[in-house]
Length: 294
Image (cartoon, rainbow, N blue to C red; front, side, top):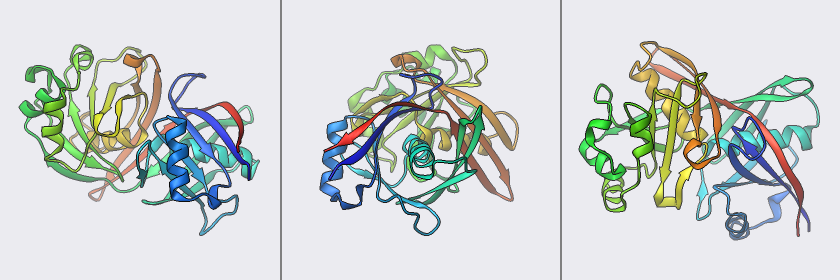
């Protein structure tokens, strides 16, 4: 059986930027082992599998695999897969596509420009906040001086389906200096549910952007990720909870991937009402290639 295959760049303003994603369609007959092997062969950060062209429970069944395991949720595969469903399965302008993921049903909302999808928005599940960390230990893991960490805000674990350690830094000098120290990193994540570290700074490369971000996940073989929707969703919740912009809500632009020459743009919206933080992550999807897996 042939399986339609698509490659897209997510959180990209142009082709060959953002985060790469492979999407395989009509994958319901593939075993879990086959999906894992295909994801390994693709060698992207994640590969998504649409199990059927038919809706089930108001959404489309999708499974996401990294190079070494299945993930309950991931940001850029959610947006990229929703784009493929809208373009190649539905084939018409729709306001929303729902994905049935391991973490639950995630809605993706569409905006259009000149008859084509423009910004896609995914609403994430309610964030949870975990433990805080000693900045000294985090500095060792990132191989930076402790004074580079902004001490007005905590270093904290946050999850909207996948957990991340959120680290506030003072400026781009601090961001650029980050290099994972393997011994310090593994000592840090041994104390945490999260294995990934997101660092951010209010100083940016592009004047129009609000924050600069880098994300490291040595544990899963990702030295550095060019664009991470799930991590930035956690960041959005963190920013609101800690009143980073002195507000209960945010609507900001975040740049990522500049250090590895794949500049990405992520749009974050979050609002706190009644003790609940609602988080949406947006971005654009660019088509790169399509074919068939045999």
